[in-house]
Length: 81
Image (cartoon, rainbow, N blue to C red; front, side, top):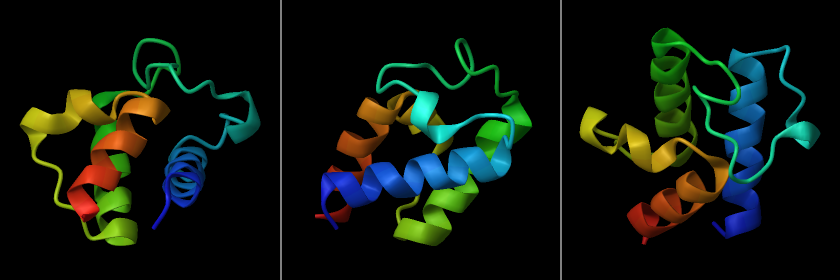
């Protein structure tokens, strides 16, 4: 899976979990909690959805590594190799 595909998956799942967020308005460095205002349950749901779509286990200690689109793409890409 390439970075563009990972980015698309992340944004699809983000908008599914938080339907008021329009994927095209999310910047690569927008923080999911600070900028996009997801709560802890939304973050957990995002982690679960990303796991289901990519097969990557994301431990709680790594949640900061998926806090932005840019960070998540790099993290997931590395974990899938």
